[in-house]
Image 1: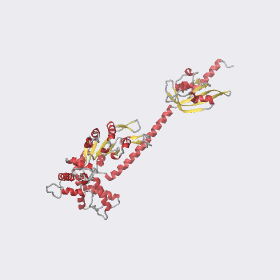
Image 2: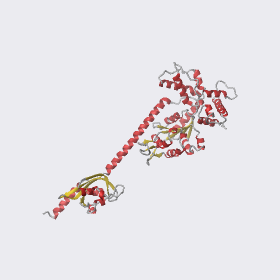
Image 3: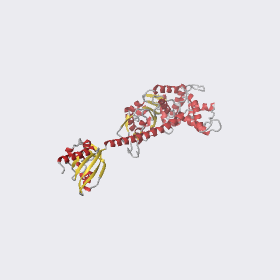
Image 4: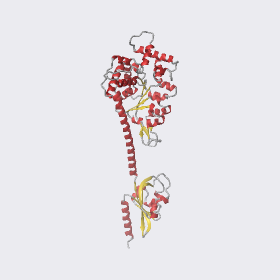
Length: 489
């Protein structure tokens, strides 16, 4: 017969074996009460053996789900092994620590058979907190990689656009005094971090000015991200500017990086800023002022460092009076305004621009560069150019396509010819020579607009309005009326 000392030594030996195991171990009787445990169980859950012996295992450490919902005993896989005699493996539950915190665990409950009867069960479990944290980090890293991949793809698309623009409009061409004034302003503001608002008629090259500011700034090695505010649907404004997370709204099948985040560290060019709906201007203002925003459907704040350059052909002060543009947003954007002169105020730049476009277009179309006569160049210089540089390029491109032989043949019905005739007939009474000075030309321009307004009975918009008679956009006419101080009444 083994003595008491023998039994004590045996129990101690068995306990040493249990305590050497790295996993937590509980022994249960057929009622689910704890009969033994090991040191690892105490390390993982904090419960000492003397505190839990004879207590219900489920009540001690398996009473609730991770979210706090009650875990019914009849659903407990540990107890199931005591009833059905099967081995139960679980890898997605929690045991409760003595301090009340939930410990993620995986466990296996194995029934104990004695003489063909279920006598209890052994529960072996391990803390999987580190594994879950590593999985969370992997998932977060995967999501970050996806976002970065999408951002790189979008930056690649922007880079393609940049390359295309650089090839086609890689330099600001001209040597007129009006252009030099603008270039001086660019030099002055480029190295500063302040916001710039570029004013000018449609087609004068406001985007090129923005690109020049970016290239000469300390952010030149970072992206210049363009947003055409007029092309963004109202209900997609937030997504376009700030991005969204998957599932944020119907059709949001994947994460999207917004333009603000794409421009982080670089320059954000807001073209046609006056087209942003009033209802969306406050959200943009907040993001620009605070340098932070949240993606649609996300509560995580993203911080960005963005320099803003905006452009418009609208009179934003008039838009403010009409309550179509926020005054606080205007002053946030218009720290340093730059006025881009229209092409008719840069007459001496027309010839170099025309030669540049001619060479470029001939190369694109696979043709030898065509000759331009002085008569043709003189004709170009006499045009009114309501569409400015964009219109000049279109005229040259149309002429290249239509020309045969080695000489450029301009279409005599080029846009702006009627304006040229109008200017000629509306000269002041003072007799002029074959050319006029810039000041005289402005007088001619003013007189031409006043005559058009008189002919239209003071009407500026719509059919038979002055804008239609002059062949220009109403917004361009409004800009000219203000510039020359003309009363439209």
